[in-house]
Length: 440
View: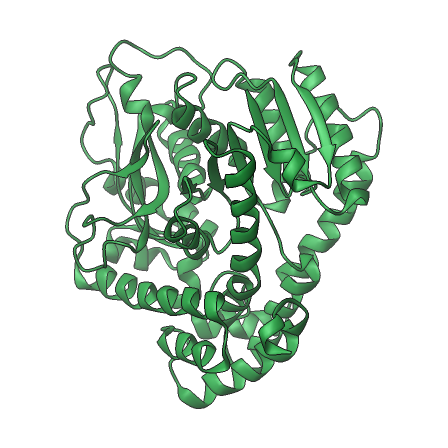
């Protein structure tokens, strides 16, 4: 089995190697190809990937290349983890929105739109090359903004599924709080990528059947700790009876976030410093485990989510990512994973071709969303609003044009004022000309 990673020079990649090593029986990869045009990053990352796999006794051949076409040829699955423009572009995305009183974030608001505009064309070009070189390969998109990028891939007819680590991170945290095995905990996770809520959680019995909802118990016993983790008031969680993702703080506490961002080191600057230190660690020829510092980089449990998803798509083993044997009747339930997929009527207030993030059944045919209990207006209204923005953002990314950028910003619930949208557009285009040929 051949697995290719486009953006393989990412400092995330040793996390993936660790997952492949631990979960070899789930996803028996024979060849791992890391594709990246930046060889000064690819080589130290590739070296530590080889050492990690060797430490686990994993026999996979690791190939490093800057040739995308050769790297993905005949692959069974291709992971996309791109960052067009690198951390320098991210730093700009987090800076200029603050000039207009808006949150500076790489996937939300104006910064998220800037990332989508420069990322979608590059991803679609890479996907077309995958289609030519490996027509039967599945594409797993971990590239942000995942919802918009995944919709672009699906609209272009690619065999693609979007993946985010928010759900699996909550699953692992909640499982530890409840003292249950993570692969037995099913989340009622619903929304759009980076706009989701946990509305319930259930422990599965030995037959894969869900037990009673334990979210009220979790909030009663661990509410303050969860609220502190996502930086929202515990009263909000208890009033809603949900756990919002961390990204909801940009909506529920926008002005406080903007104020804090103006007086603190940006996340882009923090990540850039972490990446420099990680690359120094990776250059150590004795390092054969993922360093603890990698946890501060983000992407927790990314490897387990990716291995589980690819394994389920290719039918190579249990989709749990747990590495443990399953009880009789439980394996089928493990084929359920939170993914970014076509709506297809799951949320009736959205178009069928919208991309949503919900528990889905994963198999050789792709990801099929499971039924979702009706949402009240508090959640459905915001989802519909952001989904409309995402549709306009994708249109702007595909066709370009200043007017389309303004329209997308006007549709975003964190912006919505014409003078601010105009000012943000000017700053976006000035900052992004290097990656936006139509804006030059």
